[in-house]
Image 1: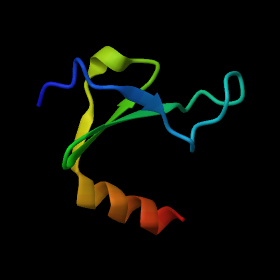
Image 2: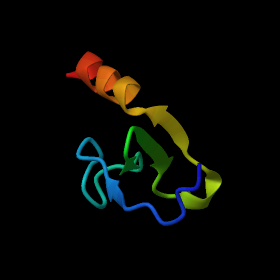
Image 3: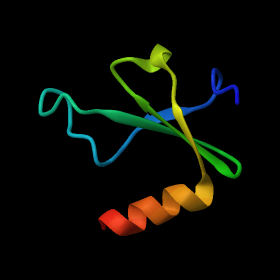
Image 4: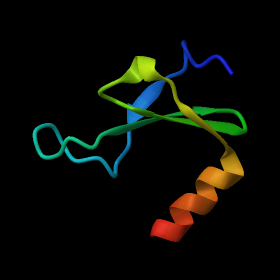
Length: 61
């Protein structure tokens, strides 16, 4: 899946600038969610079906 033009946003679970080094960005494409390391956006992304992303979030809440 090509996410080069996806709209990435910093996850609300990542700390604000300077607070943490663990920053995750997410991109929502219909039916799919991309997750990547904000420090290394060119290193690729984990691609998940939207239902799997929602299930994972529900587990951690």
